[in-house]
Length: 187
Image 1 (cartoon, rainbow, N blue to C red):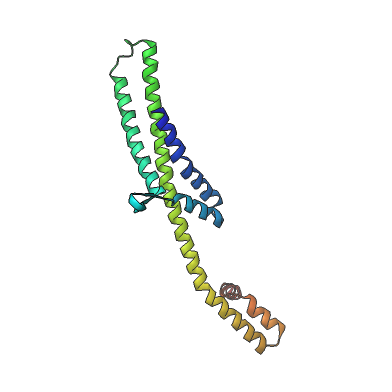
Image 2 (cartoon, rainbow, N blue to C red):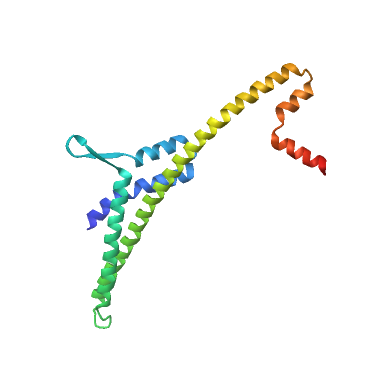
């Protein structure tokens, strides 16, 4: 079990942990988002001629949940096994052995719970990043025609109105500023 647990921790803990930390601290940089997306969406091919493929995130989450259930059962069994013995009738060595086994199983339970949580949070962060990118693209599409129209309108106003104060007032005021000045005049 020792080597299997070591391999499990080496394969399934670092990727979601590093990705979650990078996305929450440096997620505003596009190269960090692309690297985390590329790492978590790696595809594992199997079958003849690589007909089937599964994403690394799906495999990692499935393995983490499976190990979590195994650790939950082992922790529960160790707790029940310790209750079967009367502590006054055991030797100190046997008592320490039972407590060590219980502690190891509880530690593995909490580590596997952390790994499941990290894979779940990574999936949620990746979905949020994708939605954020889509919404930003929509905002750019919607604001690009308005900016072009404002530029054309400003140029035509500059040509028709020759005074310097009129052009600076037209180009620098926004609808919010106009509302604020009207509210100040009303007071």
